Image (cartoon, rainbow over all chains, first blue to last red; front, side, top):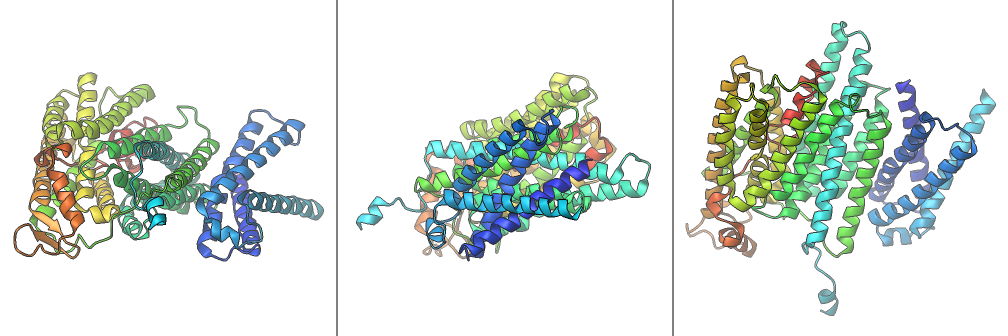
Length: 130
Length: 449
């Protein structure tokens, strides 16, 4: 039981780090130091979302219910804002200026949207294969 | 010229509010990181290896090895990590990465519990080094109050982490949420400090560890031995009255209070006076501590008071290599925690004697520290004696610092006493393993750092 929960964390965390860092690189982030800081930002935000979702479901919230999706939406929104702040805090404005998305909030939204869509895609592929 | 005047210098010292905010962020994060690491090792790694069959000696050996690896990396590796951090000079980032590495360790448990424990130790070491150096930088020289507050909170985190099931904490949500919040708080703190035009920066790196004269050697040996003894006693003390989580919590709170008060009182009263008042009295109280709870609690409070003093003394002596100095204290902690237990030294008389020995060693360290402040200067290349005709290269900063040390504002130089930060209250988890369930002794040593 605990092992599957931790694997769920691992899957979410590593996929998010991979996708969001990849997208950041594609958007023009070339400095390895800043890519590493992007990974740090993911490592600090992703487990928080998963932990809150896990706590909510263990407290009786039904997965896929309207309340569940409202919680996920609220969490994702807060993560976008938090990541925007962290990006601004950890990455020099000049570095962002050379990227195709130069606003921290827009960059955060782009990265999170890409990883979320990737997650949906993988889920769909998994459903098809099974 | 105009822009220079308008832009605060990069090394401007943060104001009081910023310093307190940073101390608060690091202290709370210290609690969270130690709690998360203890929960990972005792709540995930050990059960994953031992499972429900505690009679499987091979798996129990693996679990013990995992705990040893965790302690080795978390404590002994702080020395090399500290040396790297001295070079890197971005301590908040090292600390935030420490939180992230512990998070990653949680995801490694299903793959390999032993690797997860080792990685958690690495994250723990990174956090402590980053936070420790920053707090030492913030507090300035000859001040132990901030380091005392920083190190004290870990003891409570460790205690609650080891007793996580008894206090109703749930794995893995609680530690992961606390770790993410801690990491984000540190990043936010770093940003706010820089936004104010200030920087919590290391002093220029210099080779203070080469060619050490006698006073410096006395500080190094005196303080290191004091920490080893404190760490050893942290595991040796086994009060018979300390049964159950409630009394364990009270005992841990007393340790936390002792560490906090040690720095605060030490700065007001003088470090040497604080040691003179606390350790001999603790020694007397230890004699009756097994029979009387109040005596045991008072002894633990007094015994832990010198902890921030030893740390600050070492950090002041090696002020250009604070990360390495911090690492020395944790290596000493590890040595003390791993030392073989001698039955006599676990008795009240043995503990009282060891307490007196630690008093003697800390006084030796303070004697050396007096010499460092009054007889020596570090001129950028090597230590030199004041007045030997070779001090012409002494920098203005060193001269200013020395004058500062002799001013009444920083209290009498001779009163400064040290005691390492970690002090006997170690967080070693190894011994906890053997007494899992009663779970109080780890808090004894407290977390130390």
